[in-house]
Length: 600
Ligand code: M6R
Image (cartoon, rainbow, N blue to C red):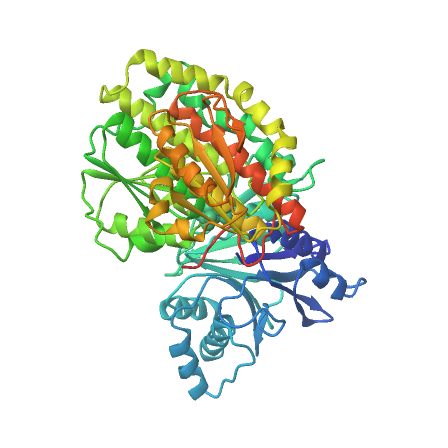
């Protein structure tokens, strides 16, 4: 969602740093952008609805500046227009803000009584006015920030420029990520280190209720009490190529293709020395049950893990959407391990659920892709997927990395609780080691996916069906298609069709099924015949060399259920991708969506 960049320098023009930073954050999703910088001893603000390139065109090409802040906004309070876009400015104070000020209405009422008036519909302008109110009251930055932090309920990463203190940027943080990148005589602040990797890979991470004064020469980080903190300087090792499309037309396609290596990279540390390496994974036998929490694709990865935990290791596992988790009875106990799955590690609903579990002192484990993210710090134990930077909004390689890591976790658990034999575990390890060979033909079968895409891209409804594990996989398949092609697609348990949904099937309705479990396949095939009888066009992913001239069939190699999950999903991902290309949608940045959903 929203992105933040700020920079202050002794000897360089910071405007290119701000614009490059915003461009690097574009993948997160946004609908307006803005920048504030020092020009002729005054703060100059330029804002626009739409893209960063539009903002760049609005800037005076000859402008240069040594201090500035910039923002991409994903609208929460008020429309996506240039009035509501950040930066906001009230008297002496100019800010950009990620997060939500939940008690903004109460603060606004209070400030209106103090004769403040507001131009925008945003909570951020209210926050800006509150900072100005305290600044005028105390004439002291530390006291201003302390009072602000004590008053505001909600989340924020804020960059602030104060009119009569123009050598310094002030930054403050609660529940929204903020890093301070360090370079020689130029310091750069951002909501994500990836935004500024071109300039530095050395950075401080601010924790909640911390703030900092940043200028060209130094960074002073303080706690809300005003104590100076000695924070660790982190270094990130990300290959720049992760952030470039190379010869691919879209990041999504590049990321789908990268699954040739990302799956093995994720599990290799736990299988490279055979069964001994598996023992390095956490021991789950001390827990009676497993609970899994996540959103969207991460939730779907959790469902796959539930299937494996329950069917293979006889361990009860419940999976919850993070947005629902807080508002239901979760039967939390110390005997239940709660696993939080997240690519970004910054999803607000997942963080809220995690905080709830931690408040009850119950054990937590994270399956996270982005290192140094909020969730990775909050969980008791964190296992990282090694998918690398995922830029496309639609998650692909992060999903298969999550599923692979969870599969290996289940495998190690099965060995420990003796539901899986050593021989079987060794077979699964061998399969993972041959993943590239298994997955490459599926990744390369463009003709099949494109010909299916040509049949379906004009449709407005698409049904996905499956049973057992195939049902959970079809949920992820349907999500991929709807988010990037905007075709309405839903997944149904195949056996449920005739309890209602079959009424929607008409001539040429596309139905995509996966049937990769030999016990359940005959039943799924019967369900397919039922929709065929009502005129549906059928596409079937299976691994039985099943032949039927009335269906279009995609065969995947026969493997154990541990690895099948990452094979079945490939046709789903690529059918969605090619369908979206034919519809001409903005594949990497679908409308209304954000890569990292940092509001609840
Ligand atoms: O970063 P997270 O894994 O926590 O994100 C969760 C969902 O927002 C995410 O998976 C979303 O559903 C993707 N756009 C799906 O492709």
